Image (cartoon, rainbow, N blue to C red):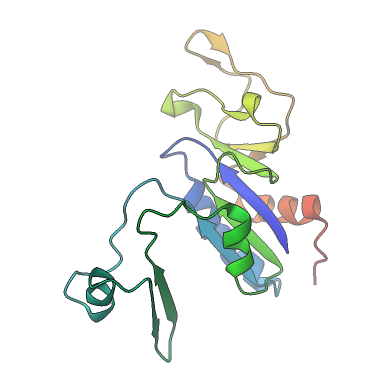
Length: 175
């Protein structure tokens, strides 16, 4: 399975970029998984729904199956959060898995960067960042310091171009 990550500050557009690229990959006949990390405790359904009630009552894992989709909920109940490798192993086979916000993962990543957020690039500390996607040229001055990088800068507002560049980087054959 080919894996490619996305990193960047909150509000930089990681989710929006991934969402815009998914139809591009699908149009090329590729099966794509997405794995997203969050530091927040997310509510997936109202507490009155059956699956939430089962989990609240002590079930370790609850699976809901419908003719339209399957949802799997697992309660960690104090156990360590699974590693990226563990989570990747649980996914269905795919041509490509996009990973959002596993910042410390040892996988090739694209840093999504918007100078307007006023936050610094993160790539200097991450040897796995292979390129930057930005909505601005990076020869700007920000906070009185030049933003410089030796990494390629990809056009953030061109998801089809970024999708193509990811496929080339990962050497995924295209139909």
